[in-house]
Image 1: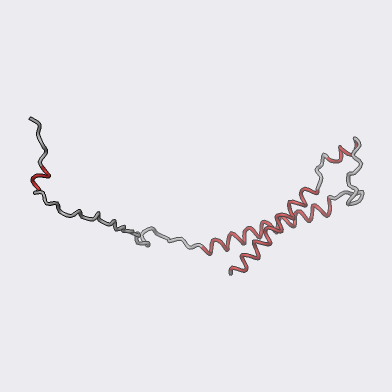
Image 2: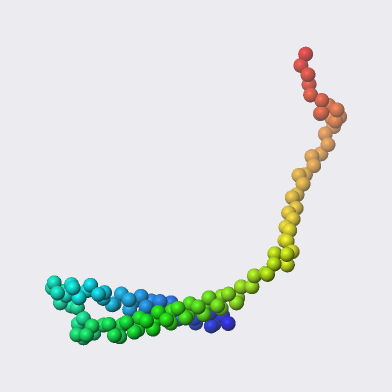
Length: 122
């Protein structure tokens, strides 16, 4: 199960990077207007018809693949986490900490009455 998740995650990253590349390669509708004003490099890579056919279809295919892969990854992640149906099913966890008591001091030779009574000035 873990290898399927890893393979799907690697596929997701590859599809995402490829999709970003295909979107950045395409030129917008306003790019043809730039060719009229001196930009002579428009549509020379993919021929005179432009890059509309191949790049548009490849981008659509990659977008569908990205969406489907995202849904499969979400479904597999949901199956991995099982939440309790009720809060009453789980017993509360109580953590008790034991605090060490301070060491008792040895009793002094003075009587307890001498230690407890404050001295009153005259």
